[in-house]
Amino acid sequence: MINLLPQEGVDEVRRIYRRRLTLMGILMGLIVTLLSIILLLPPLFSIRARRESTAHALSGAKARPISHEADSVSDAIKETNSKLKLLTSLLSTSTSSFTDIVDLIMVHRTPDIVFRHIERSSQSKIILRGVARTRTSLLVFIKSLDGDPVFAEVISPISNLITNTDIDFMVDLSLVEEKNAKD
Image (cartoon, rainbow, N blue to C red; front, side):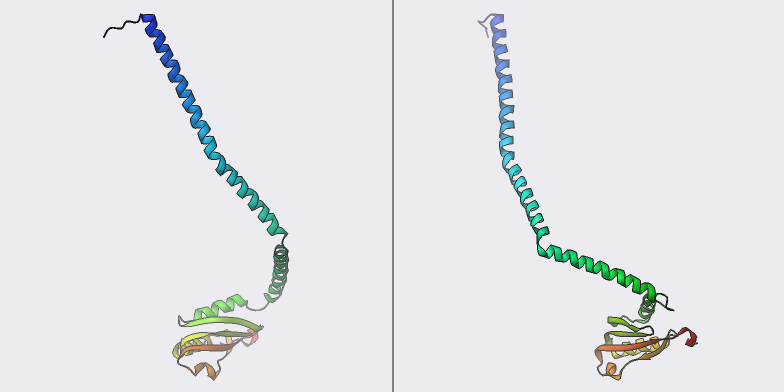
């Protein structure tokens, strides 16, 4: 192929081509940047609006009376807990702590016994309420408690033995005083 343009003309055409190619590259880069900015603006505005509405809702929730009630309930709970700590410290001077007694009762419990309520009615009395799957498992549990030297007396009403299965029971336990301990 014969080129009829002189070398200077060919060089000039190449420079013009390079300028146009560079200009098109820059123009395409600007178009992509501008397009990405335009496409990212709606999500940005949406995020800002959500943040402002959330902040407004949070400030509104804090201003509601229910929030003040929750704060007052929280203060009442803290006050009650401090009173309970004081009572616990006064009761902890007794011969055995309630948690130790509950742990001991749990040692005697069989898998068929489920406790619903454990209450210390006085310093030496404990009331157990629960459900026993069978009469035999309840009797084994009561005999086991009766054989423990920590309990002076285990009282189980006869009404505990009326049904054969799914027995709602109540057992009164009297703790042994240290000076009257069983052998």
